[in-house]
Length: 257
Length: 338
Ligand SMILES: Nc1ncnc2c1ncn2[C@@H]1O[C@H](COP(=O)(O)OP(=O)(O)O)[C@@H](O)[C@H]1O
Ligand SMILES: [Mg+2]
Image (tube, rainbow over all chains, first blue to last red; front, side, top):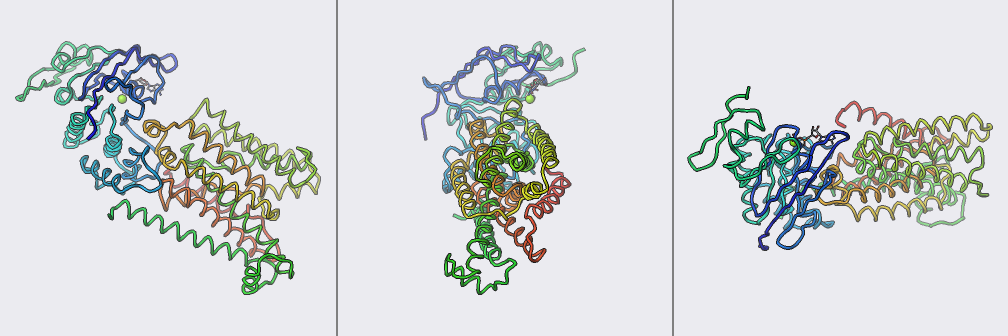
């Protein structure tokens, strides 16, 4: 086992606009230490755009600095699982996962890489999909396959864009606890866009709330998930509670009038 | 260890070997078909004799049929490889040298040369090919720079259609201006015919194919990533811009050499990679090998059909591949799974 990493991510003044439309208006965030971080916010605030910027797919102004201890991390340490993947490829699910190891692949795929692929597919409970065409899978299955690809690449920063939105409860929990487990073992950090606030509180150590292209609040679930903030951001009245095991719970009750 | 993945790959290798055997059989079949009454046994004997001027049949087999067959092999493989690469890097199943307008550009280059003598090289067959080559490469470069600013693949295909319209208009102008003699020369070019095949041409074409094939094999896994989409490739850490540029240059060169040599033989670059993909999927380690084999098979088959359809005369192969290709294109469109 390699040494655990000691991750730090500084996001400084990220701005993205499309034509005249300013989507991100200066996002600042500092994350340090392993674990899951949630990003929440209403539809269209630019959560996905922020994540694409971090993944290096979206051009932006500003700075992101990802470090492991004293060392800056190269791009290959970042893995990104998008909200939706549409493509014309005839790759099978197995092959799609395999690409997570692309930097190490030669003409013949070594046996140990194949077993690694099966192992990660087993962990995500998608081994049964191995020979199906990726393009023919359902939205949730596609995301799980890309998630497997991401885990296979052993990233130090894992970016998950609404990984749970298209999944049933069982796979939601499985995915989130796997992500948590992976981070715990390796010291990596994962940034996850979610809509379920209770779930965010259950799995994430900190939550960033995005509003109007900026970070509205960032902090521990208890600090961020208050009735006032949820009303300000989502226009929803919610009852905040505490579960038996000590997690913050959010029960949306009505639309704020 | 026997796993699903290994078994799948074993099946794919089996298909590739099978198709390679079919290709080799077709090479012989093509060598043995023709208008002179040479029997298969005689042909085999002459093949074993090696090239010489011993008899008329020796000459026919080694100096007439052999260059044509080798041209089928080289051109079919080149167009198929180029088409497959274009489909991958443009992420469009309809991309091919023909649909992007590169073939019609080359056709216009040839017509221009026939009518005006451009680019004024004293040796006539080189002159026409060079003109076609210039237009093919120029058009590829133009399409690429136009699409750099607007990388949308749909736009790219639309630009290809515009380019095709432009060059067929210019081509019509050339035909209008041409004398009767020049006209038949231009026609020959438009149809894409093997009658201009020469051993030098075949060697250049095959050498070019081999060179670019080896070059592409160096990027197989990166290309496989790209076949999974631009975004996926980028987030897997592939420098997609560079890969695109490199592969686009490769496929343009292959196309240009083929079409400047035998004229516009359409649809091989579209049909062959599709067939290959349906057998071995998008893993480029297999696709890059099977596409050229399928391309060669199609062109060899077309050549054999062209020779036996009208005894004593050779119908331009381009006509046959176009007929097959158009039906295939229609099938792809109707299937709606693009
Ligand atoms: N490529 C693009 N071109 C133009 N506008 C875009 C593009 N991507 C996102 N946007 C706009 O940016 C805003 C934020 O989008 P997104 O980040 O996807 O929202 P969400 O927070 O729901 O993930 C939306 O208004 C969307 O229309
Ligand atoms: Mg989104």
